[in-house]
Image (cartoon, rainbow, N blue to C red):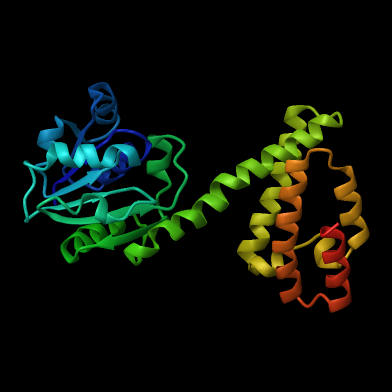
Amino acid sequence: MEIGIIGAGRVGGALAIALSEKNFPVCIASRHKESADFIASVSKAHSVSIENAAQCEVVLLTVTDSAIKSVAEQIADSVNKEQAVMHTSGALSSEAINFLKANVGSLHPLKSFANPQDAAKSLKGTIFTFEGSKKAKEAAEKIVSAVNGRFIKINPNDKILYHLAAVLTANYTVTLFSLSQGILTSIGFSDEDAKESLLALLKGVVRNIEKNGVDNALTGPILRGDAETIRMHLNAIKDENLKDIYIFLAFATLKIAERRGLNREKIKAIRKVLNG
């Protein structure tokens, strides 16, 4: 199965490296030829033109969401109904390219890609979500199996909700970490000490989720029903935006505490504090 990858960024580069190492014939192309040339230099993939990559049995569009339609239009005359063409957007469904005369789909790796070379080495166990045509599914399953990933088929209409879940965890964890780091540096921590302290805390949380599940990983004042500590937190927050974030997350966390068995009186007391 010859694979053409159009887009030589982090995702496209990682897949090109990983799949070529598994002895798939891989052609990689990019609007910026030097990017494709670099991936070819560190893998068994071949740097080719976009038109040539589009002639492969399986074509992966690993470009940004905003570029998917224009790249698909560019290769429309080069693909046919015998080929499978998939994009790797997390938010868009295969409908974004269903004007192509090919077997279309979307295949998204649920992973944060730092750089192509490191990501290619750590694809094992990665969840890949797919939706699209039968032939595209067959090709997608071969790709996921080759990199030792896990394949999950989803409904096209649920694609944006799937992406929302990924953003809440991957992107907003970074945001919350940044806010917490800012608080610690404001009271005298160095940037490095704040980062290391919070990283140790975060790693412990991840381990607890892995070992015990999300509900049982919860600790802290809400689980204890400690309304007074929550009141003190709110009184200490000077930034109204941060206070809004705290209150919203506290209400969401209260639902977990309720599932864990927090009694009604303590729940009522916390809600009263959060409602001001």
